[in-house]
Length: 255
Image 1 (cartoon, rainbow, N blue to C red):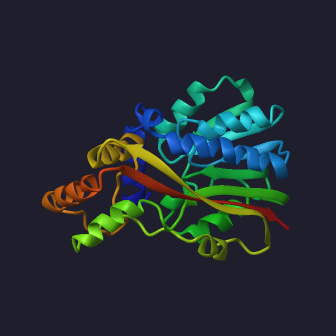
Image 2: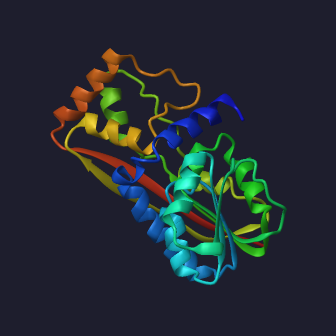
């Protein structure tokens, strides 16, 4: 596992006990994603990547009561907590897995899905192809990820100060579609903007830490403490602190 992947696993593993109290957007999108999947598929065997504490897992188990589900996460504590919280018996198996190197035979699953996890992929196109290969013909690859306008308030505050925050670059919906594996058709492609409210800018940063998402972009130089304080003051000066989550949802069906 690369140094970057180990960092991601450590951050999310450490955040397992605090994740749910801050993951409001993630929980909402998980419910919506499971509903969108249920409109186009009735899978019997499901692989979930980036399961976290189990928001999407729980919703999938509810929509597909006869299905078997394998929930996986890069961080072993997340996968273990997900399994512990579900009352699903033999229907659910949980394991640690790097979704960019999936450890299953090709053509095994009816559905492969992940909720707000793909933004952590180092090579999304290769990852989507690898995950798509796990599907039977007619199977669905469903995922949500972050889009271009995510945390735009933070970017704007930094720009006013001539600073560059170490926020990753996220794709547009069109750019995400460019990464669709060959031979897959679009069942659904949608985007929405949601806002997470915070009493102040520091609380926003603490919420990212609570869910394990406080890592800077890969190869980015973190802001100095002084620069970070300047941005905090700039964001607070706007009087209303909220964080934009630009969420992209795609469901791709294997031809």
